[in-house]
Image (cartoon, rainbow, N blue to C red; front, side, top):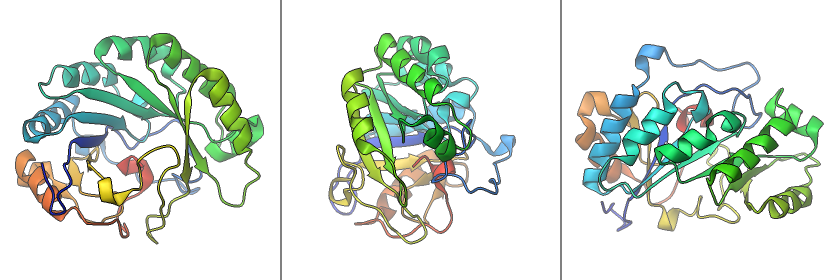
Length: 265
């Protein structure tokens, strides 16, 4: 699928839930969030059908996100269903890693290729503050479980926290010791449109952006930094894809409607 700026759109980021087992300061507000009602969230069969139509239109890569995708019931079955769709060449996942010791082997067997794992500090107390209660050792265990299962190369996503004594060098050294790749992501602000290119990745480079996004309640978004979205339930799946494709902006602007926790970051 070519958009208005001749970018070939082959990548769909799929938020399977807006729920998470952590409460990271840059993702969720301290006062909590208004979660979707369960009946609003697409079933795994509905998600697979959206991916199938996307594949018919030219989607080749799927990244499963959240919230935290591993808290979604049926996540392994969803990976297996997507893996059977003709045209899908790669399935990846962004996760906080906490539940990977439980799911890594099953996910690999189902067809997941690799994972990006969020890790913002090697200092246990700072990690606990940033995640509002998370245990660093659980995240490290998740990274090692991913490696053991062959979900490689493991990529570690580090959000560069503003006004923090975050030790980025320690994160680099940990990633190197674990045989993982590290990516540094400047803290973003949807409301002001503040974002930059990911260090060590292509995210944030609007000129080569090849992605659309599916939210857990069935909205296809042309861009993270855009208010526009098109319901697969209202417009039909193919039409929602085409409307989002046509609405994809040359460059991200602002998003005053969504949040990271329910779009997938």
